[in-house]
Amino acid sequence: MPYQNGRKMGLHSKNILKKRILQVESIRKAGKVSSRTLSSRVKEFTSLLLKVSPHWLDEIKGQSETSGLDMSSLVGLNCLPDGFFSNMSPGPVIDTSQNCSSFFLSEPSRNILFKIRDEKNFPQSFLVLHSRGFYSSQAGRDIGNAGFAHFFNEKALAGANNTGSHTSHPTERPLFNDCHVMRYVSERAGSVREIPGLIENLIEKKAMGGANGERGAIFLFADPVEGLLVECDSRDYTARFISKGKYAVTNHYTTAKARKWESLPPGNNTLTRRKRLRDLLSKSGGILSPERVCEISRDTKNHPDSLCKRAGSAFFTTVSVQCQFIDRKNISGSINLVSCGNPLTSVFLPLALPFERTFVPALSGDYYMASEAAGLTGDEAGTSRVRHPGWEISAFDRTGEAGALWEEAYLMLKRRNDIS
Image (cartoon, rainbow, N blue to C red; front, side, top):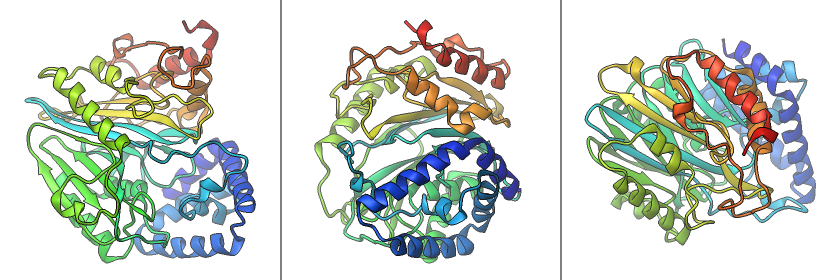
């Protein structure tokens, strides 16, 4: 039950959740954001959840009870005002141009969906979430985020979200952001053909938001048959099914309809990353191997406008990667490559579908923090002096016990003095 799931999340993640809530309060005071403003947003977002996904509130209630943290504060992590973290004082440079890069690739025997995520450097969680009455998913997200940043559900449907263009339809209301939309879809859709109807439902219920109030969202989805590109904002969306070839996405709209909503042209960062991703895919030949995916995820060319970033103490950095190899005929032969951390310092794990267990250090944030501890030797650019394990996917046996793979990788990350 969602409440029971929430109790486990709260039990294992309470230390990080407490730090996040303390950080929010500190920033609120520094930025002179009134407590009334945050309370009003929590109240409105709670009403939205009651209407659209009430079981998420049951989950948050469970987190609250075992963590000892106020439920409204936990809800508040999901509906902060736009630009809230720019009030950090003293704080790092907030470069919001650094965001995600994704691609869909159709091969004769499988479809591939890839996402490398740049975001605020909050501890990341990887879990396998089973909520009664909904599809279960292997998912990655920030600890405290009710949504998903990556998912692969039990029907072999995969999803990746990206920040979209600045939109001419901005909104200040606390609506579903791109991660919330991802989870909403993952729990209800068994194929890409079911997704447009779900997006329309969110728009009709006035629940649909973008990556933030000023920018829309871009989604790539894939199942064993085809892929789907969705570009949207709070008022409208486009859907393009992809039956063959490849499609790369960064952080600007590419469809004619969605470009009509743009309030600003795409910047150099998103254009550079999309070109680089397309070039790397073109150079990879006809079949993309797991090893090649690992290499692409560690690409730092054109830094800071690179696919992968390692910015040390900077607030925005590369936080995770997932890539799903979806077998067309044998779903159980599909693989989800998971890096719960920056791929320069983390380890890719090949998880089969179904994989039903959650490894506690990956849930709690300890795995992510161990990856962070393996990090820099002093190079802010993350291009030449970063020490990373170099462990490729071939170092792990896909047929082995997945829980043992997490344990082995975690222990290697912990032994940072052994990294060369």
